[in-house]
Image (tube, rainbow, N blue to C red; front, top):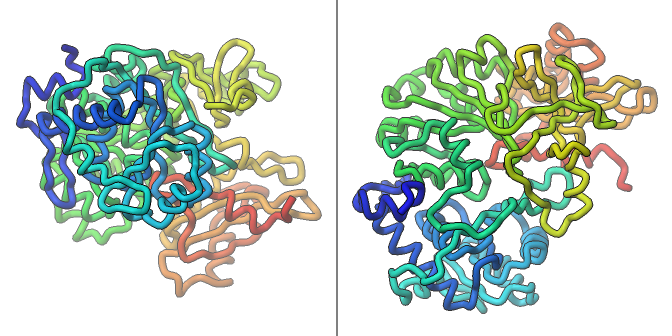
Length: 511
């Protein structure tokens, strides 16, 4: 039996915690996870599901998430966790797009779930966790009726995540999936795990929602290699520090907006907790402002690691604190796959020039049912892109610039909002910020900032002028916001990504 699956650890260390719910202390041992995931796999077979079939669920963080996920994995299913904040039509789109035969809904979305069942989306089996709704079965009761023995035809399944949909309909990302032994993890994931430093001694904290790729896969790898995952139900900065102390966390993963909120805690709260067990703090998913990262390294020491990757799993860069201090703002050098920067015609660019980021991938993928979008992601040389833009320096370190979709063209000058957002986010009066282009008769587009202030009472013309002047002291004037609007809270989802499309749409005429 392979040592890269919870089933191995269920035999070797049955009583050890596979994961802990940080907020409640509820502990699920490897033996409990093994038995429950077998029952889940048995249920899927009882529903007539076979290897290669698709299922989906819409669940918040809870103790059953990984029992269901590992059951799907060992039953050979392609499984899709759906963002818990998506609305009914968005969920219906994903269910139809992936062809899910079975859907599991949280009781918290009971009303939405009922309409999906009533309107007869193409799902055959409907289950609910934590309650019931018309046409739904209680999944816990259904699981309890199943044996704890493995299904006879165990085979490895795969996750099919959906892109966040910040630029339109989300795309289903299906890796190059072929049936394999159920207890063997894909080589790409194991390579990432080695860089991250997973082993059976790790206690890994995730403060993020599990329906996103990075936290789900990271927890999955932690358990597969015999470590213990500590799962927060919802991010709160002080609660996260308390969890590090209580569970003697050795490793954690964050997104930059969490760093900002941790740094905004009062000094006495920041210094209240024992973080001495904490050996490695990894961050990804969104660019981290240089000033914010400097402050985090000063506080936590050189334990901060960063990587750049995507749900498409085509490659990865990585950088530790010491490298980053020598190359501030970089997301590192390629650690999986080969990195290439190309212009709009596909020509490879030299160091220092900005272009589309491609990887020569170690594995391929397809956008499920989207042949044209899949084709558009490919370079003639076989390299693959997810649409990000950046450049490498002379030492091969990658610097992200932005997504192509958000680039502003003002008077013929290309402006990348990320640089401006990074600067504004370091201002002490700003809690969050979004920058994008808005129509301009003179320049075609001009720079607009929408700011979430630390103190809403300060929102207004005086703060607007203060921030614009502050930017003009530090950036080329063409990059600085011409105007600033204020919002009490920006649409930043709990994966750390800023959903700018809906903000930007307010300023552009409908097409």
